Amino acid sequence: MKDMVVLSGTRSTGSLHLGNYFGAVENWVNLQKEYNCYFFIADWHSLTTGYENTENYVHNINEVVMDLYASGLDPQKCNIFLQSKIQNHAELHLLLSMITPLSWLERCPTYKDQLSQLSEKDIRTYGFLGYPCLMASDILIYRADAVPVGEDQLPHLEITREIARRFNFMYQEVFPEPKALLTKAKVLPGLDGRKMSKSYDNTILLKDENEVLRTKIMSMITDPARIKKTDPGHPEICSVYAFHKVFNEAEAPSICESCKKGEIGCVACKKNLYGKVSEFLRPIQERRKFIEAKPSLIREILEKGNANAKIKTDNTMNMVRKAMKINWE
Image 1 (cartoon, rainbow, N blue to C red):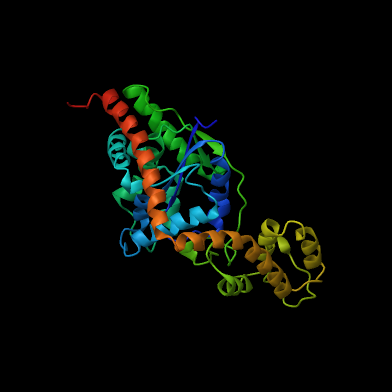
Image 2: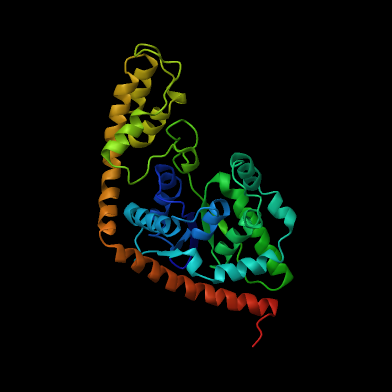
């Protein structure tokens, strides 16, 4: 199925965390074995909410590349590239913005949610409102057959499909309607029980080594009703137990029972978890140290991916201009 194109990306907001890994990257590592994959660092997308502070812009891009490589993405098996180096994304975004109804953008659930969640930021901008149109351009310019998404991301993909249908109807059949590659990702809460997010400062980064990792895990919020070790616990509301179900599947059932019976304390439970998470991260961190010691490899990976992405998108833009009859020569 290597002729089937799969496209996905991640924003360049800095080092990846465990939520990013289990929410997307783990699946990408498997997809690269079967499909013609294009995985991009969405640096323009990072500006939609972080346009005021660009001091770490380049540093954050490098951090993401190192984490993707460390997690198992192989530049010999997939294309890893930088969104802003493929100018065709911007041209297609401009053209698609001309035909995308404003109401489609305003009804996007993410738009309303983010306005509420990021109320301390001034994101009532044209760029943030047009985020779904840029996302559609990112996907359609590769004429992607499929996009790996979770169920909560289906509305985003549907806007892309609607824009593709509108373009094909108005001009000419250029874009396939990308299908959803539904993934059942493992869900990890943040250290405080909320969604793991850098905005909440509750993440475990893939690069967090022993002392940092231990401190973070020992600070995790557990069952607030459990004061003493002998008090019966409620593992279903405990972040530590949620982690055990991912990193310690074999012991998780017995940990659950021991917690409910008050036979295991939270400190012992966290220490056990620390060992499991540390063991899981070790090979990722070893690969990260390898690429950290060879910064030229970051450039090599991106330049190879950028070159392949440019070839693919040049072809698409020729088709788009021809369909719209705007290719003046």
